[in-house]
Each structure stands twice: as C-alpha cells, then as structure tokens.
Length: 444
Image 1 (cartoon, rainbow, N blue to C red):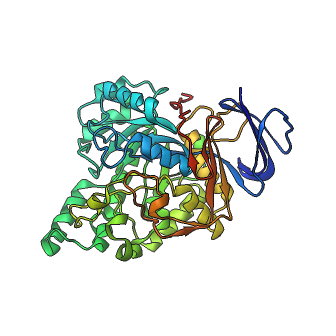
Image 2 (cartoon, rainbow, N blue to C red):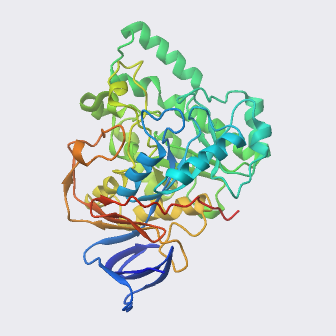
C-alpha cells in the first residue's frame, strides 16, 4: 500500500489552522498531526501551502448523457479536480432526464467508467413520477431535485397537489430551484414586446425578478414546514430571501437549508455591461445590495453551503441574443480560487471557506467519510499556494466548452495538488490519467 506524507502544510480544518503533517495510506488518511515521521512514505513538502479537505460541490450540470457537445462527466470532473473539487453531485436535467431508476443507474455506470472525481447524482422529480421516487434508496443517491421554475429543460414541477405529495412521501433531501414561472413568463412577454428578441442583458434580473425568487422559495419553505419535508434551497440570489432562513440551530438539526453559488457572491448586475450573456444564469445575478446580503447570510449561518451550479454551454450558444442564449456557465475549475481571492480581500476567513464548501455539504447530505481531514476518512485533499498568482486564459482552461467568465482575471492563489482517495490526481498543473474516483455513499 503506497504511503504519502504531506509535510509542513498549513492545515485548515474544523475551524482552526495549524502547521502540520498528514499521512496517507492507500485510499485513506492514516494520521493528522503536527509532526509525523515515516521513512517509508513518499514526502510532499507543503511548506507555505494551505492544506484543505477536497471541496464537495452539491450542484453541477456535466451534460451527460445527451448534451455532450457542451461537456461530459470525464472533461468536467477533470476540470473539477484541477480546481480542488474532489466530489460532485450532478443534476437530472440531461437527455434523457434522470427521472427513472433505470436512467439513474445508467448515469452511475457512465461515472464509474469515466469520472475523475467522486460522484453522485440527484434524482429528478416530475409531475408524474412519484412511484419512481418512492423506489429510491436514500443511502445510494444524493437526493431529489425539483425544478419549481422551468429554467432548465422541461422538468417544471407545477402541480401543487403533486408537489405536496412528493414533500409528504420522501425522506430524502429535496433540493429545489425556486423561481415563479408565471411571473417570469409575464415579465418576458412585456420585454419581448418592447425589445423583440434582443433584450438588453441588464433586463435579465428584472425578468427573473426578486419577486419571482421570493414567491417561489417562500412557498416551498411553507410547504416544507407543513409536511415536515427535508428541504434544501439551491442558488439563492436575493436579499429578501435571506429572511426565510435560520441561524440559531446547528446545521445537522436544520430541516430547511440554503445554498449560495460562487457567481452570485462574485458578480453583480453592474457586470452585465462587460460580460453580457456570459454571466446569464438562472436565478439571475442581482444587484450589489443583494450580493452583500448573501455574504452576510453566508457568514452568519443562514446560508449553509457554497456550490457552483456549473452549467457549461458552447461559446457560440452563449453569444446568441438574449432570448436564445442559454443560462449557465462553467465554474468548477475556478470556484475554490475565487473564494480564496475573497479571503485575501478580508471578506471571509479561510476557515469559513472550508466550512461552507467542504464540511457543510458533507453534513447536509450525510456524505460518508468525506469533507474533513480526519483519520480514517477518505484522503480527498487539496493543497493551495496562496501566493502563486496566475491569469485565466484559453490555454489553461480545462472545460470542454473552452471558456470561462473569469477569463483575463488574475487570481492570487493556485491549486497545486489534488488527491482523490489517496491518489495524486493533480500535480502542479499536470492531471493524472489514472482514475481513482468512487461513488459517494451516505450515512442515512
């Protein structure tokens, strides 16, 4: 069994930072201590480097099957590994959609054969697949995803009776995309009448408005309280929605939890003028005041986890006029370093980044033996150089779509090494061709 000894790193874990060592044996962390001696181990000098648990991204779209001209599990999982994300949960709006047990297992088989990062999937709820939902084993799948706004594909769940039946009949975490479809359709019709197909991008957060977000998320939360469902609200984007969440109980005891995405923490409506449709997401990036409120809620515990909602499209697709340009963008390679840029700015501590992007997804989804640097846990470990600046450019982007909303930006820190279940999967710019990824399991 191969051993690796990470020496003299700045270990960031469970709210503290200290200089120390980590011994990896096989797939697992054997020891974490201030000083470890092992003459048989391969030594990796981590002096000056941050050592963190691999990030767990609870919301990605890797486009396989059916949309592989944009991305696939192999390409995007490699980009994730290069970005310090070691585990991902992929969404059901592929072609075909993941709304039957058979289609879910087919996706697991694809990931087993192609993924470079640890993987699980959401099962998709529809207006007519409650019977399939009831077949799910909560120990073997990340959770259930409902689109309560039809922003992606045609998976809109809009029958109130069906929604209540789903909420009442599953013990899985129900993750929801909340935007009110009627409000969005009304707003879209208004601005198409004014501008035609080429609506200015600055109108996007007006069409997919604060009201559409709050109306949908508040209704979902009210239903969760009524039924006792375990609800997780994806990619929050407005200040008003922050009033819906609590920070007075531990995450493990919460029945209603919240997520924010990197792009809603980074961009604001002022960036549409420069970035245009490249930062067209659903929900829309809102104004600076909303962004500030998201940061406040993230730091005080109302928002529990950070994710990417990585959703690549080709650059040709994104450069269409407003009504034809799809929403979504690639983020898994740049999310961790973007957050550490905010550490440098003093907006968030490095310990809090690890809590929200590594520890808390593991708690929220009850992921087994991941999300922490603990003895006996899987050795998903990321080493970051906080003083190695680099500029995002075409020649260092790993996404299949070959573009990034961060192109031209110079980050102050760089991912230097990524370990996946003890395997040195990313080594100072070089991605290993060997795959050591595993299907995520859950303590439920």
